[in-house]
Image (cartoon, rainbow, N blue to C red; front, side):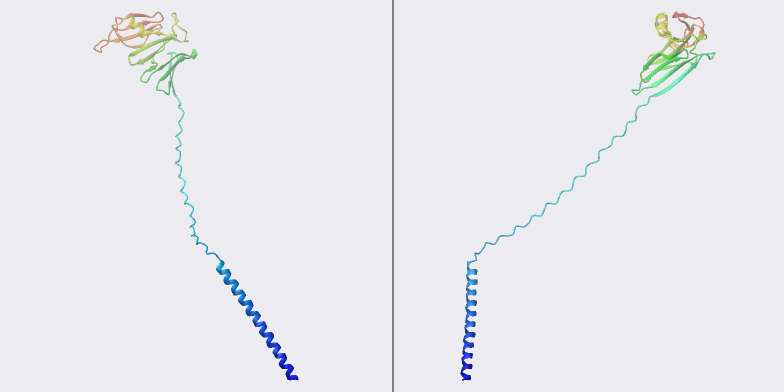
Length: 232
């Protein structure tokens, strides 16, 4: 009896084990079929070629700006000023010639005296021309003085009152050279050498061959020209 029950129990266990194994085989078979079906239903997608990523262009170097040349500073023009003074024989008066070198190569000449603080005469001359003060510019009585203008055409002598007052003809100065040329047009003016008296200026001339010609007196303020027998 006991043996029979044991056999029955073993048969039941065998059946249960067989059923379990069959169940597992069935599940495995279904999973295999599902995977196969899924594999067959997957569409074949076209292979897309990989587009190479373009590298960013290498930036060109920025051009180096050329340095802007700095213009050299222009020095301001400073006129050259010089003074020349002639003192009267007794030392009581003086006449001053102020020379100013201008930017355009011209020269300005200004005349003052100890009796006049203002410029009594001013003239601008081109390069190569000049005005000078002779050493014997003052008359013996200190009432007059003369200056000399040197140009390309010759020498001009101008006579002034010491205080800058105009003469009777309202002229600022007496034109000794012009007056002499009117009186003796054929004579060759050489120079005014100085004073023979308070109102007489000595004039010398030259002949065509360069030798000494007739001497004259120029009378101030009458502007008269007087020929002399004696040569100075």
